[in-house]
Length: 421
Image 1 (tube, rainbow, N blue to C red):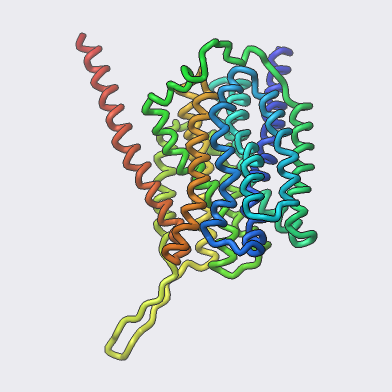
Image 2: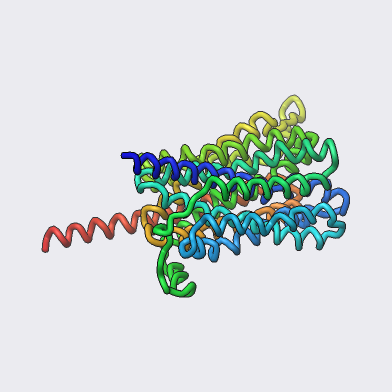
């Protein structure tokens, strides 16, 4: 009995320390979504260049996820996550001294390593809990995505008081402190490591599994879309509704905060109702919301018997923010449900599979801000970002419908053949 209590206490300590570490990592990973606005103004960047600036950390954080996931399986999450966090401290600090556009892009690549923390923490945390609690545990850890909202609370306040150059200095100290706290309160269990002499190439053969690609598509929507919008929404509020940065960041946090915190709720729902049902409804909620958000501010004139009649159709800030809030909740739940799929089907190599799926989601978060900027430059319509996301959700819904229908029919046919044998 005492052993079980001690084991449970250690698992909870690991979960708490890992969640704190991931929250700080995500906060810093998203910082260009706020400090990029004054940088854009001082450097005279266009929308596409701004999108690339905000997306550079996401690129590295995505590409590093696959090896990090595999290293976590082999060496354990504690040492991998600690070393990852420590390695970002100096690049974060140096951003304060960057002066040219390419300086920010290069340093952004190094800072982006913090984004790989997710593919370390997910398998690290999951292995401390029994299978029927893994969804909730991974959901609680994944709530560290709320770091995107934390960034929106902290960075504008620092910018208002000391300028944007102070933000990287504060964040560097924050990362160092978080790494030390994580090391003190986390733990290592050698039995969690995957003792295998299989090469990286052999482990990556899982990419031949069509299910992995399917989960990559889902995650690129719920996580990639979350990252992309978290980086883009502060500027959207500033340019579309003429809010100042502090108010824009506060409103944007109405999307980022539930999109991170409620991931634990998504884990609970996935444990109770299953990953498929939860993910299916997440996609439908996003589909409807993005359809409404896509409609641009419109003014048109109709000739009537009494003369021309002018109509204005636009989403007010209240309606717009309410829809974003709904999308944030849906994406939080969807991020947890996708990883419930993985924990159910890939018990022995969660780290490697979560790294691959995390890579897809991260690449979505990298590509989307750039595409958002390019579409605004090309069309002049700011809501075009939601049009793009609407299309990606359509792909996911169609894929889910036909692929799962096919698998259910195959399972039923196999059961029927077995019964007749």
